[in-house]
Length: 261
Image (cartoon, rainbow, N blue to C red; front, side, top):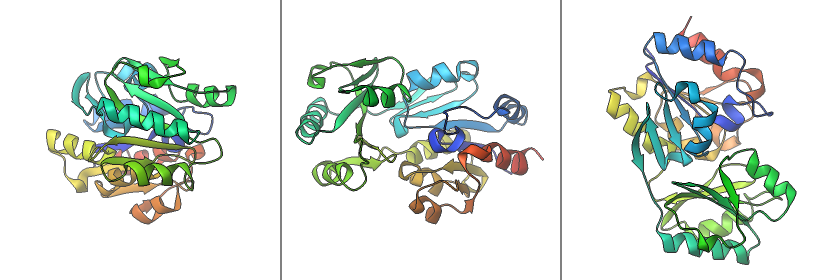
């Protein structure tokens, strides 16, 4: 019996227009009635997620910033803050390589987007965000550094960041244009394990959905692990099961089939 469901947001639960499934409220409320825990697991920050899911803050669990900030039913469960000097070092490194940076912290998000297309990309994922020319001046506890490369980051920016910071930090490819940097050991999967242990749920009782490399560890921690048909090829090799695309309401269909039939 499935007792816990965790789903990624972008490219998974949300369609390409960043919209929730039309039957989301109905499905989630039925899960609550069956005491099945529902977890939103995202690279997005809590300030963004709590606005979108304001109705459910006391009922859901939120794995935010790829596991660096976890909130369980309205209570902060864990937080992992990056060293301030490391944040500045990454900002300087990205400046040298013409990469846009976004800092996710306790009091908001800050970015150094230089044009409207970059600003539009930031707005599609984050609220409570401020544009600053010099991000080394940000004075906040930073949980995650998100780096954006407009031409695609996997074969260029990600490689450079992994070579420079990968030995000491978790440098994670999180999308076609994005790479995220967190403290070592911080992943969606480690956060999911913490939640499983907290509420007494086993691997065989957990379902998870994902589409990109920052979802690998989360999928590895659930038997009912689903890769979206639009997922990165590496994700399809990791997941135990396949489902349709994010535009086909596939997450809700699988939940209804396995948990609510």
